[in-house]
Image 1 (tube, rainbow, N blue to C red):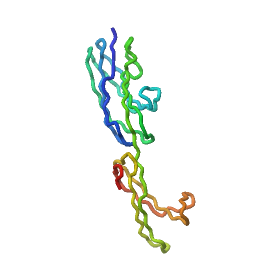
Image 2 (image 1 turned 90 degrees about the vertical axis):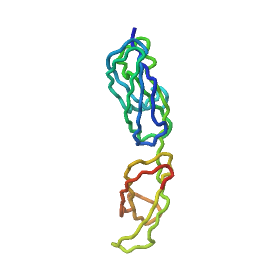
Image 3 (image 1 turned 135 degrees about the vertical axis):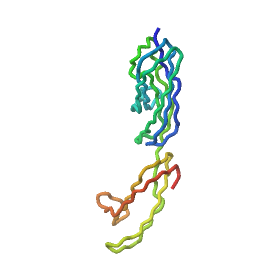
Image 4 (image 1 turned 60 degrees about the vertical axis):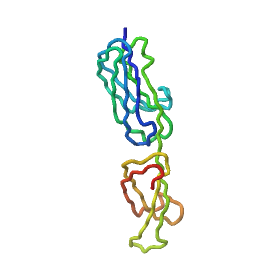
Length: 193
């Protein structure tokens, strides 16, 4: 008889903002013969609840376990949510990633998928004011405010605002001149200025 390693639980917050750290906890069980050995667990990101929509591996963890029949183990890690994705995906916990453990007829039950929604922040300029005229070489006061109109949050980031001088209403990075910048540490929830 062979061991039968099977994922039985995968826990995390199911709605997250991009670039956040999330705590992920998983539980595996041996339903088969006593097992004493090692293998890898993996947390994958996929567009589908199986690996046919595989995007990337977010975490891989070595396990050295003694698992008599019907015993479980639990593991936990923090995973950074990718900042280049937005929408609905799946986190997939794969026990014995790479199939190191011979499980005879039990190889088909090694993954567990749970949906996750990744949301983005969206900063929008709400107000800007500047004098209509200025004297060359003298400082001017410029004020502006922005708001997070996106579904996601921004946590402990540094926002860099840049001020450009333009001869018209169209912003042109190659033709307009940068005259200032301001770096500000921010944390913004949805719809927060």
